[in-house]
Length: 257
Ligand SMILES: Nc1ncnc2c1ncn2[C@@H]1O[C@H](COP(=O)(O)OP(=O)(O)OP(=O)(O)O)[C@@H](O)[C@H]1O
Image 1 (tube, rainbow, N blue to C red):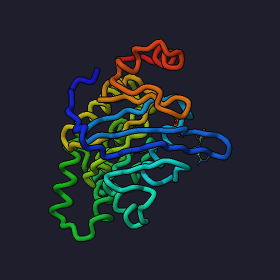
Image 2 (image 1 turned 120 degrees about the vertical axis):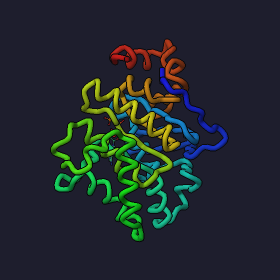
Image 3 (image 1 turned 30 degrees about the vertical axis):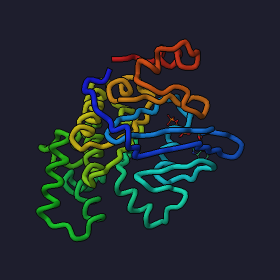
Image 4 (image 1 turned 180 degrees about the vertical axis):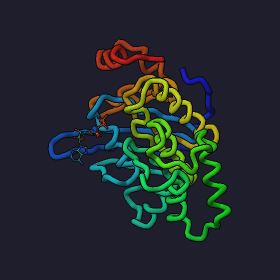
């Protein structure tokens, strides 16, 4: 079970989804999704490969359009948002994508400065330095500031990727497979970092994964995506304390810390 219990504000959903449907040609991927993400909570969306987890976060971030349903993100109904409002909204959402590569030719410092300078034209050098130092400290990698990405381990690169997202002070974090391709010890460190980010920056997060250890360690709430819908939602134990034959095998095939 998650070690640090967090107090989500259940009166205040930062993301609200009702009746979301999405098909590609005649393949119905999402078949009626309802979801609320509350202020300050980590919500894990768990599901097997190809169940539509990435499609869901692409729809939340406005990268894909739904066929049906109402999606409200940080007070904006995505059906009625202008392109300019969507750009502004995206700055308030941090994406940690599986392949969010760092720029190999830039130091860690320059990688972190890049989104800041691009999005905040009038920022001062002092403000940039403070922001870089704050996020590097948050991910525990202050000593790497002048290193090149090639000198970092896979886990360190993942941390710097998360720091680069945090530097814009997102209110919502979307993590797509944060532990994919990492060894088990590094996975546990990344899970701890996701919880630290939640505590320190009071972010609300959706964590997409099929890693049950990640789900167990980071999720205040788990939503199990099966057959295009959330079939079970609750704490980790509530979701897996079931005789549902579609959920049980998923549990059995994974190693849980
Ligand atoms: N742009 C697209 N055009 C056509 N089909 C798509 C598109 N995007 C996703 N799909 C299909 O939708 C389904 C769900 O894909 P998605 O990437 O969301 O799965 P996932 O649950 O994130 O899987 P994984 O855990 O392997 O990343 C897949 O069958 C995929 O082929």
